Image (cartoon, rainbow, N blue to C red; front, side, top):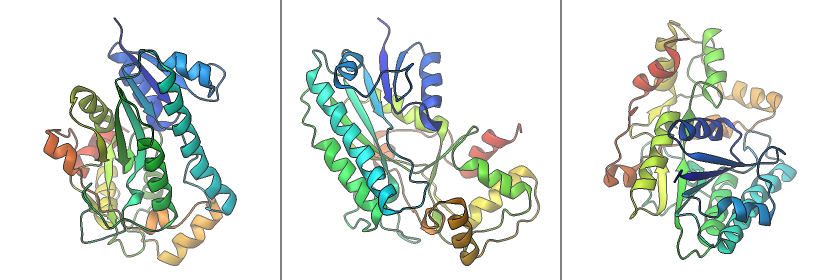
Amino acid sequence: MMKKIVIAGGTGFIGSYLDMRFRERGYKVVLVSRDKAHVSWELTALTEALNKADILINLAGKSINCRHTPTNKKAILESRISTTELLGEAILNCTQAPKLWINASATGVYKPSISHPMSEDETELGNDFLAEVVTSWEKAFFGCELASTRQVALRTSVVLGKDGGALGPLVWLTRFWLGGKQASGTQMFSWIHLEDYFRVVLFLQEQDALKGVFNCSAPHPISNDVFMHALRNVLHVPFGIPALEFAIRLGARLIGTEPELILNSAYVVPKKLSEGGFKFSFPEINKALQNLLSKR
């Protein structure tokens, strides 16, 4: 029988790639979104879609790439909590519940650090808005008591891919000689190649004993300065003008986002994936960027 995967919030950068890759492997992929062509966010429709599914992946939630005004903060939090709770209710209504539920989460839960790598064992978490969002989101997720569905919260770092995500704007800046370090350049940059994200999902599906919180990040985080240098090398751009902190703060306001998304240091390591035996196809930034950009 054809395996079925349900991707909630599956029309974005990550969801579209997972849709393509799972279809290539012969899965029946069911998307949940506000698009009329997909399953709606309505309990009966969700229950029917999730019944007899092998995997549910929930990526739904308002993007954090915006100004964190009170209105946007409320939408960022509520869009994650409400969809997660609704999916949990739909699973409880299933006659044959999904075997695995992978819920998106974020490495923003960790306290910013430039010297201390954050694994899943970390007890001193962040206390800013994004950390509070992730904490509440995971609480709602694991608060769904599901007897026959294994639950994994995937704390994902910056995902690098060809068509969308964070890499595109950085490539554009670099090509116009603006690809220098950002602020001090010492802030750590945790990342993962989009194909490795897909492979992590497959790995978690295969390993029945794995559950709980997992960091979804490449094993070798780097500083912002090192990342931008690697990007310039792959694009054959010999020099990049650095961006001072005040310019980043001003630019972020002009384009309607938060400067902390660039300025905060994220030093995250995938301890549980590595201990579980997962092997990254792209553990180093140079190999990842070569794969993503060398044919452009």
